[in-house]
Length: 149
Image: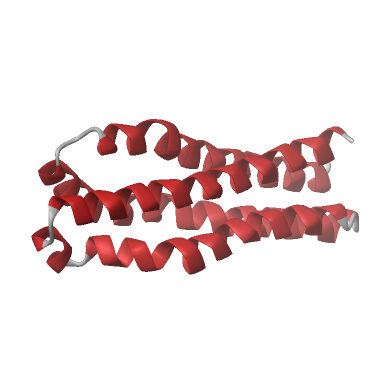
């Protein structure tokens, strides 16, 4: 029989895994494919992509933090707070480092700027997204370690 604490830990790690998977597919497949596309495709794709992805990733991020917090509350194992901190770093990075560039790319005026300007901003976004992916994979690995410990 599963305990409530086990279910909370499995939830925290599962949701973190879903988040990390979404970040990974963006960093390793969608981003590189987009960079190989024409500027016209990039200018049309990016303003549509971000809000759609955010509808998935924001709730997963919130659920992951709740899962880590619940795991700490139910086990009193402070290591779950460390995991929550690593996962929270993903959210902080997204808002502080990535969101200004995202808003810049989503601005309708961006489509009127030069192709070189737009491509440089898309490449910058993908580099920053790589950090987001690494942090989320780190949070996942740490969560798996905690479950196995």
